[in-house]
Length: 198
Length: 95
Image (tube, rainbow over all chains, first blue to last red; front, top):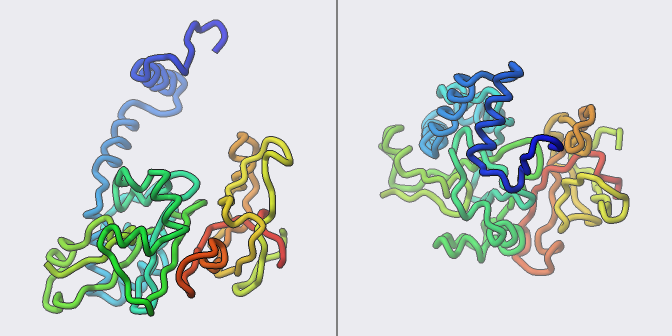
């Protein structure tokens, strides 16, 4: 930055962003409309997208198989925009195994299907405790697993992003996809909670 | 490690630290460094983060899901619980 008179650490972040955007445009790397489109896509992603996938997997065995084999393809099959997103892996909860997702190194999160991560997902406390005391941690969300259900903590340290396919709760047998999707929360797809028929 | 690792293969995470070998980007969580785990599956090949971090040309390396026994790592917890971590083959050695 010698000669520019700007110290990036002390610079006003709004001005810095404006300068970087102008440079990206001037150098022909990315246009303003492309940036606006990406911001809109990022803002549009929310846990309702992942919930739609879960609900469809509960109702449609072929979709469930696709989702467990290739999460990205399953998301795209529901019209979710995945281009440029890291590959999506899906972790299937069963009567024997419960999954909990964490990123101990930073804050990797399947944003394309769950949106922005909840604030606690990025906290040092969550990241430290998820791998060391997962049962104690999720108990604070009111999630107490039977002793014969194993816990598998998935530490998201590299190129994949992971979401949990929770167990379909009892009492939802005649529900349609929209009603099922309505009970699936972001915590259920991280693994700190499990969906309940409400 | 150039060899493809098969599911079930016992591996150890290299006891590798930037403090020991100089500037490096090592994406293995500290709690599994030097610890033994088991290959679950090959997740695909991805550019080497050690090179990406320094803007060097990055060859693709195999990425694995490696399972660790959770109570053995932390000396507490419930028997049968496990940790599943994404680790590049270059950070693993045979155990």
